[in-house]
Length: 196
Image (tube, rainbow, N blue to C red; front, side):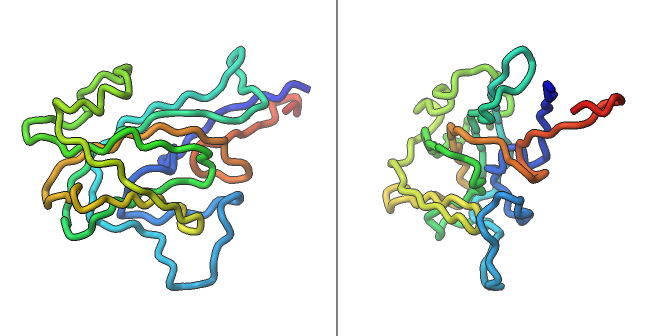
């Protein structure tokens, strides 16, 4: 029986969204939850996102999802620094992301508009142009599987100023979430003939 597969996306499509106002809802295949009430799932508010440019490329064949359930994509986040004392940027990163690369972090020049007017088909590297600002020295990064976060640690030379606009450019590979209704996931249904 040929199963029809449909892609469904929630508001947290990539689950890599930078948001300080919500907590993630653990999915069935997420890291094991902890009973420790001191675990903080919220991310700091020292960097506040203003907009996102998200590209997702699922693998398709003949308009049906192939058995390998994976996708890749690009994410450009424009944000404002609200607290320069914290020399780190924390973003949500789902455990379904198998590979994540930070292409660049750019301190934007004052005259640069955010990326909402950029053409969606612009090459991802065009968002790392030094004509738009100053590149941040290659940061270190650490992951937390329990809270599904990625911390980008900046060195002293890369200090961010309060009210500084920044652009974070990422590329990633991920697998579809199984058994949950969050993020990018697959689903099936029964038609009128009770066929899947």
